[in-house]
Image 1 (cartoon, rainbow, N blue to C red):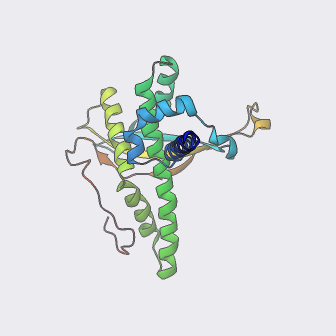
Image 2: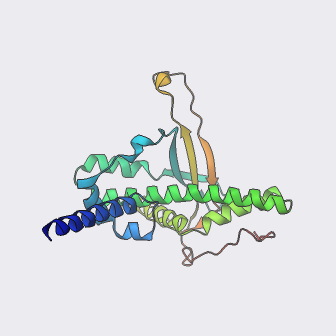
Length: 230
Protein backbone atom coordinates (compact mmCIF):
# COMPACT_ATOMS: atom_id res chain seq x y z
CA UNK A 1 0.00 0.00 0.00
CA UNK A 2 2.77 2.38 1.00
CA UNK A 3 4.67 1.55 -2.19
CA UNK A 4 1.58 2.30 -4.31
CA UNK A 5 1.11 5.65 -2.55
CA UNK A 6 4.71 6.61 -3.29
CA UNK A 7 4.28 5.50 -6.91
CA UNK A 8 1.09 7.50 -7.47
CA UNK A 9 2.48 10.56 -5.68
CA UNK A 10 5.64 10.46 -7.79
CA UNK A 11 3.60 10.04 -10.97
CA UNK A 12 1.31 12.95 -10.02
CA UNK A 13 4.21 15.31 -9.20
CA UNK A 14 6.02 14.31 -12.39
CA UNK A 15 2.87 14.89 -14.49
CA UNK A 16 2.15 18.27 -12.87
CA UNK A 17 5.74 19.42 -13.37
CA UNK A 18 5.91 18.51 -17.04
CA UNK A 19 2.37 19.76 -17.65
CA UNK A 20 3.31 23.16 -16.18
CA UNK A 21 6.62 23.17 -18.08
CA UNK A 22 4.88 22.53 -21.42
CA UNK A 23 2.17 25.11 -20.65
CA UNK A 24 4.54 27.91 -19.62
CA UNK A 25 6.83 27.26 -22.60
CA UNK A 26 4.01 27.07 -25.13
CA UNK A 27 3.31 29.97 -27.55
CA UNK A 28 1.81 33.06 -25.91
CA UNK A 29 -1.94 32.97 -25.45
CA UNK A 30 -4.71 34.47 -23.36
CA UNK A 31 -4.35 31.94 -20.52
CA UNK A 32 -0.59 32.52 -20.21
CA UNK A 33 -1.09 36.28 -19.93
CA UNK A 34 -3.72 35.72 -17.23
CA UNK A 35 -1.29 33.50 -15.29
CA UNK A 36 1.83 35.66 -15.61
CA UNK A 37 2.34 35.85 -11.83
CA UNK A 38 2.07 32.06 -11.52
CA UNK A 39 4.49 31.69 -14.45
CA UNK A 40 6.97 33.98 -12.71
CA UNK A 41 6.83 31.85 -9.53
CA UNK A 42 7.17 28.62 -11.51
CA UNK A 43 10.18 29.85 -13.48
CA UNK A 44 11.83 31.13 -10.29
CA UNK A 45 12.12 27.56 -9.01
CA UNK A 46 11.94 25.40 -12.14
CA UNK A 47 13.43 27.55 -14.91
CA UNK A 48 14.72 25.62 -17.91
CA UNK A 49 16.91 27.40 -20.47
CA UNK A 50 15.29 25.91 -23.56
CA UNK A 51 16.97 28.53 -25.75
CA UNK A 52 20.21 26.59 -25.20
CA UNK A 53 18.91 24.07 -27.74
CA UNK A 54 17.77 26.73 -30.25
CA UNK A 55 19.97 28.49 -32.80
CA UNK A 56 21.05 31.99 -31.70
CA UNK A 57 19.03 34.91 -33.11
CA UNK A 58 20.53 36.72 -36.07
CA UNK A 59 18.48 39.92 -35.82
CA UNK A 60 17.33 42.44 -33.22
CA UNK A 61 13.77 43.70 -33.43
CA UNK A 62 12.67 47.32 -33.37
CA UNK A 63 9.14 48.60 -32.82
CA UNK A 64 8.45 52.26 -33.61
CA UNK A 65 5.53 54.60 -33.12
CA UNK A 66 5.87 57.17 -35.92
CA UNK A 67 3.92 60.36 -35.25
CA UNK A 68 2.65 62.44 -38.19
CA UNK A 69 1.32 65.99 -38.18
CA UNK A 70 -2.34 66.03 -39.28
CA UNK A 71 -1.89 69.31 -41.16
CA UNK A 72 0.95 68.47 -43.55
CA UNK A 73 1.57 64.72 -42.96
CA UNK A 74 5.22 65.33 -42.01
CA UNK A 75 6.91 63.13 -39.40
CA UNK A 76 6.87 65.02 -36.10
CA UNK A 77 8.48 62.40 -33.88
CA UNK A 78 9.59 58.76 -33.82
CA UNK A 79 9.28 56.78 -30.57
CA UNK A 80 11.06 53.44 -30.06
CA UNK A 81 8.70 51.37 -27.92
CA UNK A 82 10.70 48.40 -26.60
CA UNK A 83 14.08 49.87 -25.57
CA UNK A 84 12.64 52.20 -22.85
CA UNK A 85 11.03 49.20 -21.10
CA UNK A 86 14.32 47.28 -21.09
CA UNK A 87 16.17 50.34 -19.73
CA UNK A 88 13.63 50.73 -16.91
CA UNK A 89 13.97 47.04 -16.06
CA UNK A 90 17.72 47.46 -15.69
CA UNK A 91 17.43 50.66 -13.64
CA UNK A 92 14.83 49.26 -11.24
CA UNK A 93 16.17 45.72 -10.90
CA UNK A 94 15.25 43.65 -8.98
CA UNK A 95 12.07 45.62 -8.16
CA UNK A 96 10.70 45.71 -11.67
CA UNK A 97 7.66 43.41 -11.75
CA UNK A 98 5.52 46.02 -13.55
CA UNK A 99 8.12 46.49 -16.27
CA UNK A 100 8.65 42.72 -16.46
CA UNK A 101 4.96 42.25 -17.20
CA UNK A 102 4.95 45.14 -19.68
CA UNK A 103 8.01 43.71 -21.42
CA UNK A 104 6.33 40.31 -21.58
CA UNK A 105 3.09 41.67 -23.05
CA UNK A 106 4.75 43.95 -25.63
CA UNK A 107 7.39 41.39 -26.63
CA UNK A 108 4.84 38.57 -26.98
CA UNK A 109 2.56 40.85 -29.02
CA UNK A 110 5.49 41.72 -31.29
CA UNK A 111 6.38 38.04 -31.74
CA UNK A 112 2.73 37.23 -32.49
CA UNK A 113 2.63 40.09 -35.00
CA UNK A 114 5.67 38.61 -36.75
CA UNK A 115 4.08 35.13 -36.74
CA UNK A 116 0.90 36.58 -38.21
CA UNK A 117 2.88 38.13 -41.06
CA UNK A 118 4.43 34.74 -41.82
CA UNK A 119 0.94 33.18 -41.85
CA UNK A 120 -0.45 35.93 -44.10
CA UNK A 121 2.45 35.56 -46.53
CA UNK A 122 1.58 31.87 -46.77
CA UNK A 123 -2.04 32.86 -47.42
CA UNK A 124 -0.93 35.19 -50.21
CA UNK A 125 1.15 32.39 -51.76
CA UNK A 126 -1.87 30.08 -51.63
CA UNK A 127 -4.21 32.67 -53.17
CA UNK A 128 -1.77 33.24 -56.00
CA UNK A 129 -2.14 29.58 -56.99
CA UNK A 130 -5.85 30.26 -57.54
CA UNK A 131 -5.77 33.69 -59.14
CA UNK A 132 -3.50 36.63 -59.91
CA UNK A 133 -3.24 39.19 -57.13
CA UNK A 134 -2.19 42.77 -57.71
CA UNK A 135 0.59 44.24 -55.57
CA UNK A 136 -2.05 46.42 -53.90
CA UNK A 137 -4.14 43.38 -52.99
CA UNK A 138 -1.11 41.56 -51.56
CA UNK A 139 -0.16 44.60 -49.50
CA UNK A 140 -3.72 45.01 -48.28
CA UNK A 141 -3.96 41.38 -47.13
CA UNK A 142 -0.76 41.74 -45.10
CA UNK A 143 -1.55 45.13 -43.56
CA UNK A 144 -5.25 44.62 -42.83
CA UNK A 145 -4.65 41.05 -41.67
CA UNK A 146 -2.15 42.21 -39.05
CA UNK A 147 -4.26 45.19 -38.00
CA UNK A 148 -7.27 42.94 -37.35
CA UNK A 149 -5.42 41.05 -34.58
CA UNK A 150 -5.75 41.64 -30.86
CA UNK A 151 -1.95 41.79 -30.60
CA UNK A 152 -1.87 44.80 -32.93
CA UNK A 153 -4.53 46.49 -30.79
CA UNK A 154 -2.37 45.87 -27.71
CA UNK A 155 0.59 47.62 -29.37
CA UNK A 156 -1.68 50.44 -30.54
CA UNK A 157 -2.97 50.99 -26.99
CA UNK A 158 0.58 51.00 -25.66
CA UNK A 159 1.55 53.58 -28.31
CA UNK A 160 -1.31 55.76 -27.14
CA UNK A 161 -0.11 55.55 -23.52
CA UNK A 162 3.45 56.49 -24.53
CA UNK A 163 2.20 59.39 -26.65
CA UNK A 164 0.21 60.74 -23.69
CA UNK A 165 3.24 60.32 -21.39
CA UNK A 166 5.29 62.40 -23.85
CA UNK A 167 2.68 65.17 -23.73
CA UNK A 168 1.61 64.73 -27.34
CA UNK A 169 -1.74 66.29 -28.26
CA UNK A 170 -3.69 63.39 -29.73
CA UNK A 171 -5.99 65.76 -31.63
CA UNK A 172 -3.11 67.13 -33.73
CA UNK A 173 -1.33 63.97 -34.80
CA UNK A 174 -1.73 60.60 -36.52
CA UNK A 175 0.42 57.56 -35.79
CA UNK A 176 1.73 54.55 -37.63
CA UNK A 177 3.35 51.45 -36.12
CA UNK A 178 6.53 50.23 -37.79
CA UNK A 179 8.24 46.91 -37.15
CA UNK A 180 11.85 46.53 -38.28
CA UNK A 181 14.79 44.13 -37.92
CA UNK A 182 18.49 44.90 -37.55
CA UNK A 183 21.09 42.19 -38.27
CA UNK A 184 23.24 41.10 -35.32
CA UNK A 185 26.93 41.17 -36.34
CA UNK A 186 28.78 37.87 -36.34
CA UNK A 187 30.97 37.22 -33.32
CA UNK A 188 34.19 37.72 -35.33
CA UNK A 189 32.89 41.06 -36.69
CA UNK A 190 31.56 42.52 -33.44
CA UNK A 191 34.38 45.09 -33.03
CA UNK A 192 34.50 46.29 -36.64
CA UNK A 193 33.64 49.99 -36.60
CA UNK A 194 33.13 50.17 -40.36
CA UNK A 195 30.50 47.43 -40.27
CA UNK A 196 27.16 48.74 -41.54
CA UNK A 197 24.03 47.10 -40.19
CA UNK A 198 21.08 48.22 -42.27
CA UNK A 199 17.68 48.24 -40.63
CA UNK A 200 15.04 46.41 -42.64
CA UNK A 201 11.43 47.62 -42.44
CA UNK A 202 9.22 44.54 -42.16
CA UNK A 203 5.81 46.08 -41.53
CA UNK A 204 4.23 49.52 -41.62
CA UNK A 205 0.63 50.06 -40.54
CA UNK A 206 -1.95 52.49 -41.84
CA UNK A 207 -2.24 55.89 -40.16
CA UNK A 208 -4.42 55.96 -37.05
CA UNK A 209 -6.08 58.82 -35.22
CA UNK A 210 -5.42 58.25 -31.51
CA UNK A 211 -8.21 60.66 -30.56
CA UNK A 212 -10.80 58.49 -32.35
CA UNK A 213 -13.07 56.91 -29.67
CA UNK A 214 -13.73 53.89 -31.93
CA UNK A 215 -10.03 53.24 -32.57
CA UNK A 216 -9.81 50.05 -30.53
CA UNK A 217 -13.05 48.57 -31.82
CA UNK A 218 -12.55 44.99 -33.00
CA UNK A 219 -11.63 44.85 -36.68
CA UNK A 220 -12.67 41.95 -38.88
CA UNK A 221 -10.74 40.99 -42.00
CA UNK A 222 -11.10 38.04 -44.36
CA UNK A 223 -7.81 37.44 -46.22
CA UNK A 224 -9.57 35.08 -48.63
CA UNK A 225 -11.69 37.91 -50.01
CA UNK A 226 -10.16 38.70 -53.41
CA UNK A 227 -11.49 42.24 -53.67
CA UNK A 228 -10.73 44.04 -50.43
CA UNK A 229 -11.86 47.63 -50.18
CA UNK A 230 -9.24 50.12 -48.94
